[in-house]
Length: 551
Image 1: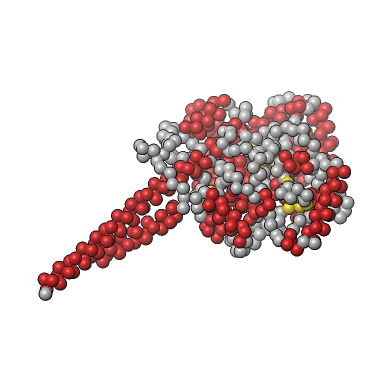
Image 2: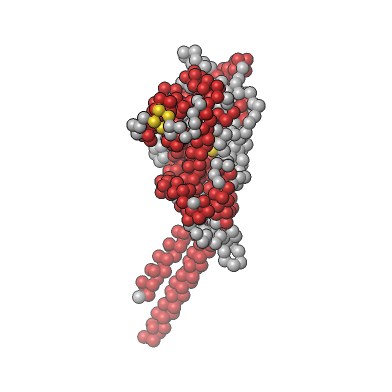
């Protein structure tokens, strides 16, 4: 019996030591005197959908409810991995981050109010992105829930579905302007040909980037003639519109404004996938000009050179690219364009409204989604991360590769900065991901231009500027050819130890909870160790007493 108790105690100690080893490297924080962590929210009295119905009517609830399950599944990995408050819910910065990633991954959308543009994730509430496209009562409802309780996975999905549906309001308002430009009445049914003409006019302004609300009726119609010249994928876009019209409207001969709004809403969601085909073509052209194979950088002079057919592809000015974080200027005499940063830039986006842009899909998002699913927590040890990333393939990196020693050292530096563990939702880890996947993941500059901010930046480089950078690139190549030491592969020239966490307060709470569990485990280990020691001493004493009696 004593042997069984000793073994049980030993197993308990081993289990607790394992937990201690996992938790011990994290920064330890304490709960407040009342035993609760700072910011602990009470549970809301009513479900969010019920509140929405009560405040705004059943129509708003029904629209959100239809998509909630789908959004829950898409957001689940990110939700589990983000740090949470004491309710187990996400606070505003994490909600903003999760929604930004969701819409970029789903549609290639960059939404005003969700995209930080070099700022902090806690600089604005994600509800700001709703603007005036939802009733004030709905904004107040989400602000109250977010500010007082945070959002659960289900509530986050409700907000995502609500935001998705609100863009339909924007489509309807802009389509109404096109209707009027063609002399149609709001409640008029249009024959299929007239309906297609009106929708193509809408798409023309949509793709060209004109603000329909700022155009005269003549300008709305003239954009249709401009579209084939300014948009090389016009025929593919028209085919996409035709397919969606059949899918939504069936074989009907006429369309009303509501049906056309539904068709164009779906078109806006699917145009990103069509555009991403062009993004991939553009990426291949940049990779063909890469400074060194696999480093995700193109010398500025090579960036400006015409291709073998004499066609000009890349014309953005240095001023524009610098402002939007597309350049690596760690070597001032040999500046380079960072491929993933360039592809994510506003010059490669379609701007259908002031609320959002349709841009290239971010290839790093799918990698992050897999990392979040594997780790399932806000932080992990560098060993855990390195082991998984080495197995994670991308378009340019094979699975089961050996990570370079320099890359592992950088990850250890991030862990040392955070007392032994790496937060996976912060600038330093994003910076490390760029080093691990230079062609897929953006380098996160500490400061960059907000893509929605109107500027007077020069957008195109002049012929003189291009020629200067071409000569500069040729000189850099000659110097490199004469310097064998400079041929070592590296992308770490921009590396800095400047951290920007998505939600620093929630991460501190996560550490505090881990610290509390650490203390409980430590107490258990000490207690059982003492019990085991006492049992051993008593057993030895009993043996000696028995032996003396026998003698």
